[in-house]
Image (tube, rainbow, N blue to C red):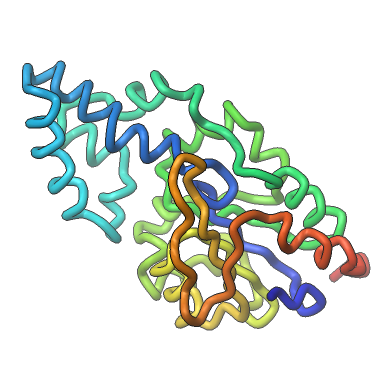
Length: 229
């Protein structure tokens, strides 16, 4: 499923891959509509009927992920509202063991996320995830989402990598397809990003897992890279 012996770098999505997507889904589909309804004195269903199409229209763009954009458009403090349900932020199963195994194998681990820096800071404060990886890059630093094929070339400026020895792990099929088109050698899809929802169907061409325990044994058998790689 993964050729660990050929890798130097592992790019990791955050929401839905390392962290439970339940937090984000609950926020956008439940908590935000409820607070939007309160703020504008709407029936809860009317608030959803207004918000969901508005949000979905931005899917795949940087605005979809941009806290500043939604705060301005909705006249609400999105990061502050996210903090109200911050207790729902948490790791997906086996993630900490997987990250420890990457480090023990000598692989360079980089979180490559579409998450805006403000909610990213909230999630790092809650989880300490930044202490378990070598670097974190938000797509907002580059001004384009991971779905954009040119994102991966621009990423080289922030965190140089060799595409032929890189693995990308993500729960988004469009992101993985974008990475493959940009020359990333290996991609792996996560099928169960939200602990409160059923797993999705497999991608026809990209290897898929439900949880990291499926690939941990092979990773742990990988010999560490020599120093000075």
